[in-house]
Image (cartoon, rainbow, N blue to C red):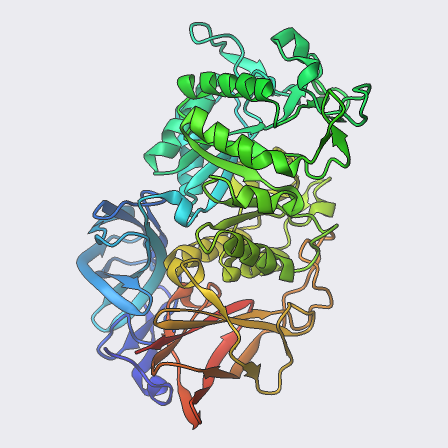
Length: 610
């Protein structure tokens, strides 16, 4: 394998000019496995992405390379494409490239996905001529036969009267982030009767609970187009919610949940003035309610090709009773409701344990993966992201992933503005490093409130680029982030820099996990951050203080070191870089001092063992 040692970089790289003022790097005996940084000039490669969000083993993968020649002269060279599993090249492709001045075109590179299931790959695309690298962009490929192993959940929140071409362009954009499942939020009419009419008489449109117009064809188009990208479509509804006129649709008060033991006050959830209704709450354990709502959902799945039943809840409802005055502990009703729903409907199921309320009970059920909407009232700091993901793995013996709903810059989302890139990147670093995923991206951009159609905060172009990098990274390194890792208690320190094990402000948060053949050290940069609260209500967090030339000290207890690598969504498009390190032995312990060139927001250092 060709590598460039740090001391030889200056000799090996020559920066030259190309006609029109562009830059290129000259790499002697160029190979994409070189550990040097290459220029991402954007002068030639404008975008790289895949045709689908997820692939089955042996599927045909199409990598789209959008080219835009900004060199102000004709360009002749090559595209070199490296398909990499961690630091190893699985396959390389090369094709000749010719573009006129200012010419744009898209090149399709076909790749046959490997036969191994549940693997993530980085795809590095270089424009080269001779030994010169003119441009570089990366993407990633998830080869997984089921999405629930590595879910990357997004959302759809608006269903206006729009053309299929418009819907397709929105799905195409979401696909570039490798989102493999979409929650269709508030697509339904009444909660207790999601589809108005019947199978033979579905209206063209209807009003949702906020009195927005929902167009049937738009919902259907979104589902069909999501499927064309191997994305799952999730039918959203409350497990126990109904409009207050529920008796008109055959729902009975005897099925309700009450605030008192004499059924004088049914539990409910108030909604804004001008909306269609407030919400009345029913008993998930009541078999008549289960039968009723499952039958209504069956009508939905018969007419709309949803794959998943996404079950929402409203968190802790305090002390509650059934109609007969019996105390009802709502979380104890969840396992039965989930399992009966899955059996009755024959689809995948997801359940929102708001602020982890009922997490233990839902973890025992047949949900596809765990989903928790976290609020700073109980889970205010970055550390709780890791704690939530770890808890999910603990409760399911490592079998089920966790998706976290955490609404960034919430306090600023009441009026138009922009998301704060620094706090968004740190929150995603904290979630992704722990092995979780973050529902945040969808048709309206990014979530800032629990009411998904709220779109006051916009993503800056810089944040969009960062999120592309972060989601590429989440896919490319899913096997080192979310695939059977367990916490390691091995000692970690950084020379002359304060660290913490719990995401303390003004530290670098460090921890390690391990699996067969690898130890993985996470470095999340909170230096210069005076707060460890993830939400950043004021949308005003500064970037953490970038550090260079760090000395990472790490001890391994077993195995022989084969190589040490750095990968980061903040550096080189996520490309793995081989690191220099020194080894000393102390008894049975192997102590490593590892040279880490740079830390912006998040670095992952992984040690490959023999």
